[in-house]
Image 1 (cartoon, rainbow, N blue to C red):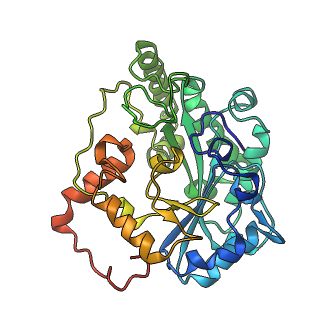
Image 2 (cartoon, rainbow, N blue to C red):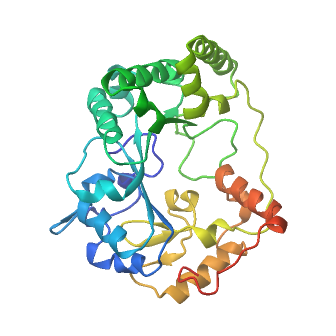
Amino acid sequence: MNCFYCTYRWAVHGLKKEEKFYPFDKLDRIVVLKPRAIVISGGGEPTLYRDSNKDFNDLVCHLAENIPGVRIGLTTNGAYVPPGDYIKYIEWVRVSLDASNEKTFKMLKDGSYDNRISVILQYLESPIKYVGVGFLYNRFNISEIPEVIRNIYDIVSYELGEKYIEKLNIQFRPTCPIESCDCPSKVYGTKSILMTPDLHEWWNKELIEVHSNINKLKNFKKISQFIEYNTNVSEIEPKYEKTRIPSFRHCYIALVRWIIRPNGDVYPCVMKASNRDQKIGNILRESFDDLTFKSYEFYELNNDYCKGSIDCCRITGELNEIVENNLDVVKLEGFPDDPFF
């Protein structure tokens, strides 16, 4: 898949065609780290994974069966549900929808909207514990937020029954670039479409209308409960101020998360990965000692690696700020013996 507003898609990431899939015979380079959790994601569609005679089912099963207790999540476009036993190892899945109807879906993503709905129902009937619907809202689909809530609720209730609503959630997030966010990403040049113009008056009026329609949905008790407990729609505010720059002295995220691209490149955050910026290294070619050392360079905010809040997106920056502000109440134990470190 290659959605035009995805900053992380493989087609613009400089990967060669043969580098679209992480080599199966090198998975043990990840296994030895014993990660607590793994999210299998794009750019591209992860369920289409294939390396020689190995497919997505082999990938998930190998990771789950060789990393005791690992929690595995999947983000997918929902274009394809591969066969296999991997389902029993997936704790959560999120299907990217971004539309409430076929017309908008075709414009933004292409493919079949009805097929994505069928995939959501299929995952809901599976052993997967949590099934999410992803909705990146922007100037093209902002008015459809109430409609997608109502449609998803009605379809699931009618096709499967009320009990399946409990494992369903809808996550709303703004699409980058966002006007109120002074994003330092080099991906967004002067020719980029401003996807979330949240400082414009028409945008604020649109959101007021959106919340008005959501309040009408809340007249129905069960839908009201679904909106409150199974969506984050309340976080969509009618008006934003210019986002302040988070303040932090260290990048703690660099020590607890690695983003590993299919060619083996390792990054501490989405900002660095999507920009093909300074990387931690390459897990296929470098020793863990070297990768660990470079992770600490990011942690220390060495200017040759990262300039902290100047380079940071507000998501990772806010996470670092939260950690730093709460270090006095959190004991960090067990790091010396952890293979990740």
